[in-house]
Image 1 (cartoon, rainbow, N blue to C red):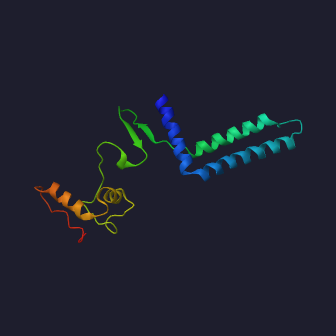
Image 2 (image 1 turned 90 degrees about the horizontal axis):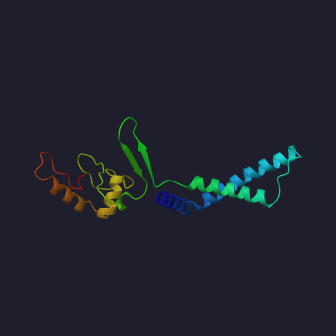
Image 3 (image 1 turned 60 degrees about the vertical axis):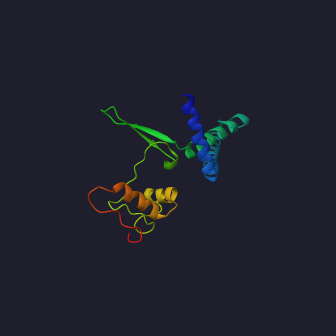
Length: 161
């Protein structure tokens, strides 16, 4: 329970840090809507009195909670598959900072040249940039070494890809 709470607070903090102006905007918008509703109620129903420090604090608290909820994004979610004993865990964040084995889809030719064959925005392109500094030669060398002895063609040199 405390680990989940700590993770949620960390996710909230990350959301606030990444989107400080969105957070302020959401809080301001929520407060403005609440203020407008309260003013309309007190205008159209003169017998209703909503004024003082306590309603102001309540409106601020509701607005802050709304703003925080809008920028909070979970760092992971679990999806249970019905009628099976399977749960898929989706993690958000830097894939390369996580422990474990990762599989990244590539073409059958293991393209390594950033640009036309491999977008630097794709997961494959990010992998080449992060792990090989964007230099395809070392990637090509490792792929060719690992594929030796397998039927088929070797990965093309990056200059021809």
